[in-house]
Length: 252
Image 1 (cartoon, rainbow, N blue to C red):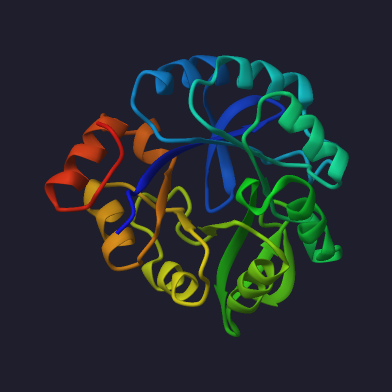
Image 2: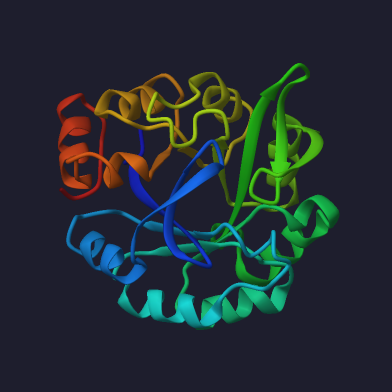
């Protein structure tokens, strides 16, 4: 097994750093730069920064905010929100971002994934998939969970891989922010169908939730927000717990 990555997720909107539940009922949880500074000293492997209001407001990424965040960030940084074209990605990389997370725009223009991968390399292109369980099974939603795409999540994940995505960030809308555990069926469904790394997101509330997503869900990396915002647990403690259970992690 490759070493598992522990990745805190920071969500921002026009009001600052927030955390929501099931993509609704957002509450402010602090300021962005102090949070980044804390994670700089907590042995996290990467950091994900998502602007959840950019696409809804039909605006580009907040390059000024991202430039400031990247200047403080000492670990690899993935940024998402409002990314619609190659120039957006180019500007983000010029600001010091390491990967981009793209969610909504490929539904209208799937070839955007291929264009981005060809120009910048698949390893820097993360496709973020927000999934909700419906009567038709797991379906994709875009625009921060507000728009149903009427697209099967497995079919979309496989297509994104074929188009050149280097990684999948799979988030359960149903579990997001609940701290009741990842949707293990969803995670395992994706990991069993694609050959690129999968980051599990949405629902972590305990150390065992994370272990289950890795052991049962076969996730390659773990994204957590509420686990670190609303408990006393730190990324270092999480890594120590995983190592004690035989799961290889990066430096503790």
